[in-house]
Picture 1: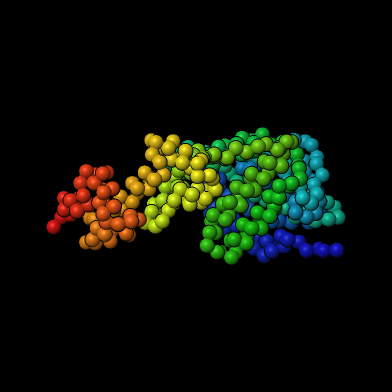
Picture 2: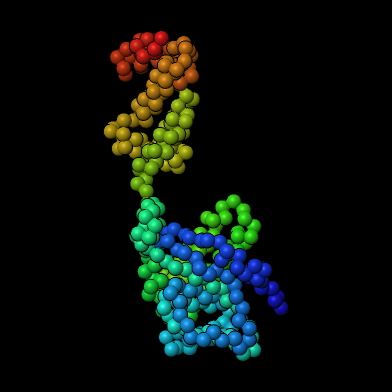
Length: 315
């Protein structure tokens, strides 16, 4: 039988995470970490009725015991967790013959409006999707039932990941711990959902997105040989579909017209920034010859490349 306990390492420095002044900003909230540790209840240990002003997440990675919440006793066993707080009166007791380990996360969750009022500091800017997800999580936290459930979404491993980050102090320490805290909250509320809900992620306007990707590819490769099929292949769509996207997204301009415009922009820069000959600029920017560039340039701008250079280059 394998008696290895994954969280044993956290006993080396039980207060390691609590020594860090952790304030996590998520959506519209500041999450202040008050307690973040592994503790052990010896057999028969009793913690009499008490309550906290903050949220307290209790996870049982090993052992068994009992918790009483709202005057209702519940048996605890390995793999379970429950939430108490704020101001939830509860009682805890380890089994009479078996110790019970508990991973604890105490957090005070404060709306950023209140934080700004306390400190006169500007509120951090959050992504709209992050705001929505944080609001949804906080609403579910406030309505979570007062009874244990199984940690079916595996929030517990994030305690160990946060601890390891604090000890190894590798680059990205704060971001790693922040993500661990948020994952514990998210996975805790998900465990109480009777039916899985479909998350809505931000979606792109795919035509506009593909048009921008096509433009980036054209700008990066305009000086070489490039055809419509090349760009369409990079976007994994047909040439006909890409041509329609160009027409719709660029006021009716075709691929060849857009490519010509990009190349002429590059020619104008070369005329102003270098002393290269017209023939050299033409060859460098994807035109077959200086005379062809002369014809295309005059048609677009009404004068020759040489005239453009003479008018715009300061002596």
